[in-house]
Image (cartoon, rainbow, N blue to C red; front, side):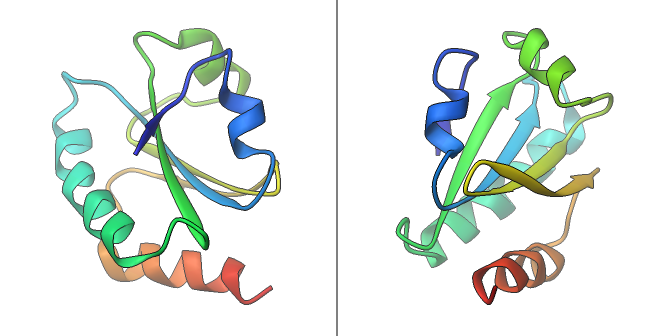
Length: 105
């Protein structure tokens, strides 16, 4: 997973499908979400979908720009455009369904 910051965020998400995890190290639910995202990152080729992370403690400006008020928040971008927002821990099946819906577009 790519660690994103204010400097590389827009250039990283500008092409393809990206699932961006806004998280923090002290967040219990974020620690629950991480292995699910890691598993999906192993199952989907990087050419189809990229999984990225933004640490909200280090990148508060970026979190604010996208209206992230609670974590974990997963933002889905398609070619640089925000297409979905998932707040709270997401089960693998739901995330797979979300990813598939954008891969089929």
